[in-house]
Image 1: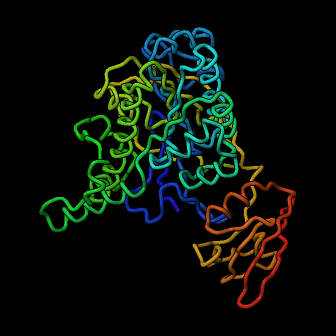
Image 2 (image 1 turned 90 degrees about the vertical axis):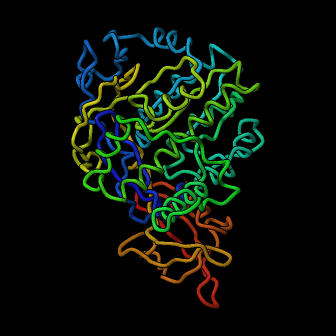
Image 3 (image 1 turned 45 degrees about the vertical axis):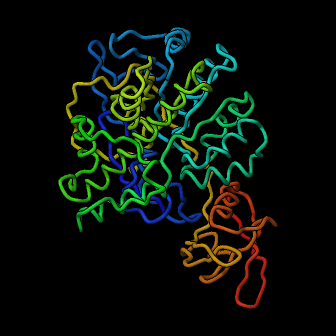
Length: 427
């Protein structure tokens, strides 16, 4: 399970993984297993003010040019974005309204510049690029692509389905921006060994070319990350966390730069979708990409105020001490409401690990769908609805395809027995 900390940035809350996580960054918790609190679903607190307008009081649908305080129409916004080579659009990962903003922007730009727009996404690690190329060409079907998705990212595919379908329908190039889990782990191990033993770099030779030039000198970025990390900011744990954050930002910035300066990307506009913390204030990806290739860019941050949080979801908001930064939150703030997909999800209620020929159940939650159906600890799940399950991501994808009111049929090996177990979820 990806380790996360949840905190409210003065700009936008964003999921931030700790360097010491043992499982792949994109690995999902087992279906139905309680997840760690995630900033991806959190709402942003008061963003402060533009020089002319208070941001937090904006009515839903307002598009604000932050430096001037001027409200823009959608057409005016799209005209403004048309002059950029790179458009960065932030998000809270589990807010449907933010993804609608992203799709609106992508659609407008793709309509205006047919064949001249590409998309880069934080959600994919660079080794997945061949699969993304197949998706963009229309030669990878959706079930196979969903497997790629869940191998890379934690949030439900449904949040991004419309965006990804549009990308395939329009044959838009899709870029995997982020560092691989292997690279992140290698860097973490190297830093740990250097701290403990000193001496030369312990980074494997094949990983060294994958580590980008990392700038640690931005005082505002560090100050913000210290606030996010909270009470542990001054300890050794923060440095490991911060190095991982820097690795992700610099790798994404390097990928952006490589594309916009390449023959394939030199005549294209790149639209980047990433968590708000990688975009807000510009010191995540944008400043680091501009350092490498100073091309015109615009940052857009969808903003959902805390007041929009459902009363029954206090987990969405967790405040940290606000940090005073002499930086605008973005070029554009687009005010939105809040909407998620929680009501359409189901949980199996098991903890799992890879097994021989399937997925091993190493725990069953009391009163869960799995418990009610008779799933036991030690069972080997080998199929769902007749489709083979060979690794955890297969089970995750199949369970997440179900909704309240659905039934599912599990193929289970229990000792020498082969069983079929029917699971159901109430409507």
